[in-house]
Length: 504
Image (cartoon, rainbow, N blue to C red; front, top):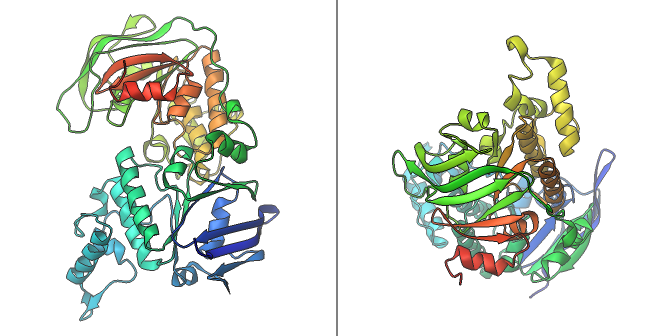
């Protein structure tokens, strides 16, 4: 590759008494996809905010093509060909695709918006990356993956040289991730340098040309994308991979959840929703059982049908909790049976982002802390204190909005909220999505501690290392049915073969 398109040397940045960057060097070459990894608080966002003009460095310099530059605001960075796509996309759902692409730089004709011209130009830009989306479609009607690509096209109208992508795959399906990676490779082939920020270590060898790992405001190491995942984890958190997962249970108690030839019959069929079909599995006290399977296998649908949050329908076959048959047709019925559920979409349906952390925590036990219909400040404070102590939520301030917390701490709030209800069975869907490695380790330890107290846990995850390292048993689903079961620690290829219908 040629000399660096971009270089940052000796970058230092402090906010009040907290030093976010401690002399960081980083460079990006034209046509390179450079992965930037690090836990929340490692300094990744601050470093990229210097590059995108959101902040200016206290010390150090930025050079483009060897020429020193100073960005006082994002517009100056955009003028230099640099743009950032944040995890929370800056798109307006109520506007169509063309209007979003030209937002703030609308085409005018005779003092009026030239909508036909904007839609023609939008179509050209979309076709340039082989994306067949009608520019007249509302962004609200697009999938998350389609919105991500629209955000890329919008950013490219500002950035012709450097594209910074913050957690671009956090909410995408496997197919959407593959499509996004294909677009990224095509952009890199044109000479665009891409900084790719992610918590998904398994994606790094698929897309990156080089990897920089940050820890505590410094560069912990620069490595090749095919470096062993254990090495990346060591650089990220300063400890080996085998210390990330707590020891498995040595024994399990009585059966909490029992499904025997259980099927969920939908009131109305829905394309793309795979209902449970002839499922047989058990979850016992003190154990963590994983649900594995390729996208569309029915993992999420099984959990949502058990909790009553999925599509309308009814269970057939045997469904028992604590040895007693139950009719799980609603959230109320599930909670009455001692079941709690953590959704895979904490920001969309797991939390009320603008509300305080404390209020989010107690919403699931509002009746318990509100005798006679009036909220008891004492009981509320006790519940909040319990959650902060159990899950080490940071910062330790129940008054701030939950939306201001890091992804890992938001996930801790979602988990703590459900545990306050004292469930017997906990259903988890993608429990560490968008969470950094350090926070994952904390969550794993807390889940294992809860299991040791007698809780049964059923967890669905698309991260195979997570299932293998965390779970006592792994049940493999395919087309809504359980097709295999393995003990935790099983070889990843064995599970994948079963998930894909290639088991012996």
